[in-house]
Image (tube, rainbow, N blue to C red; front, side):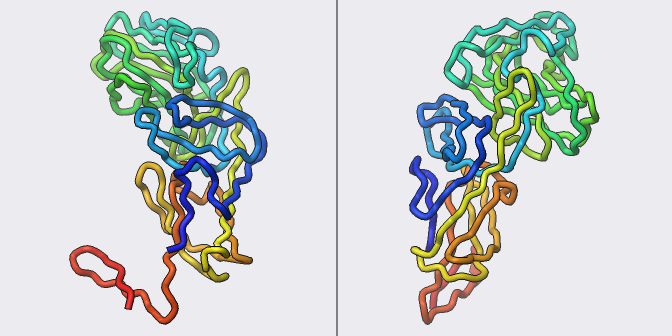
Length: 292
C-alpha cells in the first residue's frame, strides 16, 4: 500500500501544501488554538482535550461573515429578555482571557443574543465555541431558525447548525433552551459561512474575513504508483472516509480542498497490487481483500 501519513506534525516526503496568505486558525498539540496569516504553512490540527492528532487541514476558501466574531458585549449584538454579556472573563480556546459569559437571568423563553449578517447562500452554517458556566441546561444556535437543544459541557466544544434559510440581513445568534432556562455559558469564536458544514474558524475584526483555499499535491512516484487513473482512499480526523478516483500525471496528483468532504486529513492511501497478482473482492459476511 502506498500511503501519506499526516499525523506526525510534519508534511511527509512528497507532499506539499499551497495556500495564499490570509487568516486561518488551528488547534495545537497543547490544546490551544492559534491564529495566523502566513502562506503555505501546513495546519496540523489536534484534539483539544486528548492532544490526539486529527490531521492536516486541506480546506476550500471560506468567509466568516460575522464581524467581531470573538466580541459579544456591544455592537453589532442585540440582547433581549434581560440577557447580558460579561466580557473577557475567562480563558478562551486561544488560551487568552478574552472569552465572554452569556447570562440568561430571568428564565424567559426565547431570551437571546443576536445580530444579522448579509448573505444569500443556501445552505449556510453557524458555529460557536461554548463551555458550561453555571446553571444553564441547554442553548440553541440561531440561523433564521433554531438549532436542536445543545447541552454545554465542562470543556470548550464547538457546535454548529446548518440551515437553508439565510436571506440578506438574516438573524444569527444564541438563544436559551426550548423550555427557557436560567444560567450562563462561556462563548467564543463564532462563525457564519456559506456551505453545508463548519470549516475551521476564521478570525474577524471590523469586517468579514476570508481564508484562502488550500491545495495538496502528492508525489506518488517514489511509492511505485504509475501514471494513470488511481483511486485514493482518504481518512479524516473524525473517522470519516472518502474514495476519490484521480489521474496521476508525472507521478503527482493535485487535491483541491473543495474536493474533500471533511477538513482534517489523516491519511491518503492507494492500494498497490504486487506484479503478477490480482485483487479479488469476496463477500464472506464482511468485505475482505484477498491477493492471489
